[in-house]
Image (cartoon, rainbow, N blue to C red; front, side, top):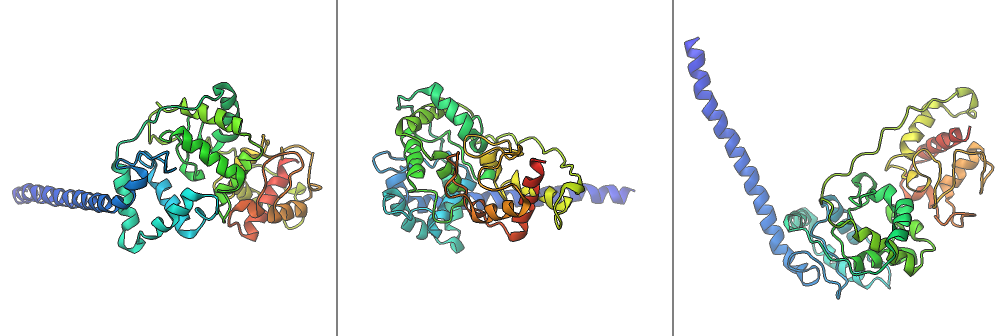
Amino acid sequence: MTRFLTGQSSFRPALAAVILSAITTACSGADALVARGEQLFDTCAPCHGDEGEGDEVLGAPAIAGASQWYLNTQIDKFRSGQRGYHYQDAEGLRMRPMSRALIAEDEDIEAVIAYVYSLPIPDPPATFEGDVATGEEDYLLLCANCHGRDGRGLETLAAPSLLHLGDWYIASSLRKYRDGVRGAGGDGFGANMRAAMTGFTDERIDDVTAYIMTMQRLPRRAPAPPPPPLAPLEVDPAILPEGVTVAMAQEGQEIFNGNTGICFTCHLREGPGGPLAPNLTDDVWLNIDGEYESIVDIIMTGVPQPVEHPGLMQPRAGMPLTDEQVRAVAAYVYTLSR
């Protein structure tokens, strides 16, 4: 027993030393990454500002305050051509070659993002004179489902926080989505933004922007609360067409209401519909007869010219859904109205 206690007492300082060394090494690695990012940021600062606060004259947004996942996603989109593809997007065209100068294999992107994330978060003043009350109505109907009622965003929907951005950039981005300057080029989530902005006048954009700016004093980078869990899908197998199973409908429920299929961003959770897309829980079908194969076909091909709603539906919802996933979503949608 004495020998055990003696060994234990000598073991503890050794273990503490190992842990301390690991922590120190990790911190040193993180510090080194940020330091490397600071050096690389010298090429970003002329447009985005020394503190990442943005520059309205150059059309460069504030990037300090953005989430790391969002910064990484946008750099990838610029590098792949999903952003900065349109001849009228002068700012995007300027950013696209800059993004390609970063070498992913050399951890350039990771380093720059780490440095940007370390910068103080800006709190730009509101300068737009929109109708806040009207803007709130549009925001809650069209924007809150993805960006949250409080504007903090939701990573699972690739919807960024809006709380660090200047109103000039918010309005400019919304106009680009409306005019097709952003949101094409294979960008599925951007296609949803295009649909949301369909038919918006400059005045409505200014109103929504003015409302968003009333959120500016909320805490930053706080994770948005997750949506409530879905109720288990209970289906009578007798109502399903031949070849369609309850398991398919259950899989479709997860795809429809999650970020794999993102159907709920327009049709809302569990399909009651909204300003962008029709109700799927009633027996009224605007574009098809409501039979299973018709539902499969319309998901596959999309709805380029909606009958009553402004939201364009991209083929396969603009997402890389497999044929099996499409058939699962169709099975779920089939059950909603029955």
